[in-house]
Picture (cartoon, rainbow, N blue to C red):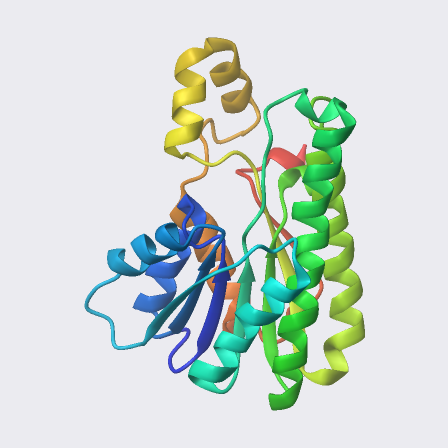
Length: 249
């Protein structure tokens, strides 16, 4: 198993990608700390995992609040004594064109960029004690290419990619690898509802992928799993597209 005996933290664990990652990581042998802005959502993900040997702990976190993030990482220390891997998956994706309003732009930057920085910083301190660790940040294909309709989302995800590369260089000597995954649109109930209301949106999203379909949450989770695992032991500082070839063109 890829994560046998590993302690793994997942933020945004109540969302579709976070839940898919939690189920997959548990199947691969991990014990989990599942964190989400909604305690109920984190608990629901924990209940969706069954028949695994690893322990599962849940907690509430606001990644825009440093004290809340520190408390989340303290749970890892108190419950397990260490942290081997972290999947910083929490973030927001506001509707198209909303972010041209400065308040919405600031919100996207605060959650996606600042929140990821707060998480990485706290996680690295605990990992440093063990002299090793793996951090995977959930960026976006829009962290590699631009978006005409979501300036805050694109800017914040570019920031996540930049922070990932910088932290990878800075913390490599501490034994900590830092990588990012960059998914394009993902098949979720929310995405499906939006496409059902707008045939134009459906056509646009489908046209973005040379494969002609959206990513499944499990496909995004598989990429995060590999980067977290020791199978990727010499992979550091990458922004891995999980986009069906969207950013290849």
